[in-house]
Length: 99
Image (cartoon, rainbow, N blue to C red; front, top):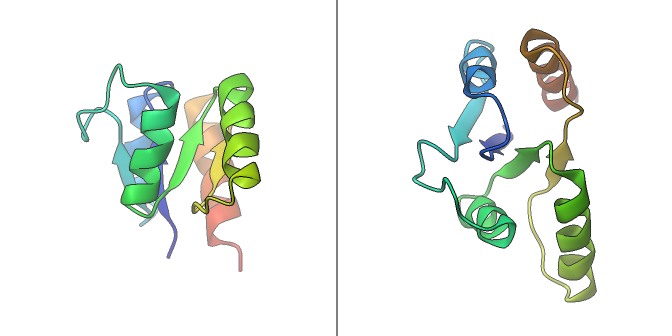
């Protein structure tokens, strides 16, 4: 099962909605990662073996490229477009749970 790490840009309600769908979710708030750099957020996701979920496309697109060029592996990054949190939960859970 995929583990998700929601950075501080993601509405905390999304974590509850995803957990109600039996997904494993950790948040920046729960992990005491609020205010940390994007690199720290991604490194934390790697440390806990979780896919990072964010709205921050610009910064994480650059970090993704940097990590790929250095040959550094990581579970993944999901960049969500800001939408209604219930719709995001529906789409994300469908994406994660589809084999």
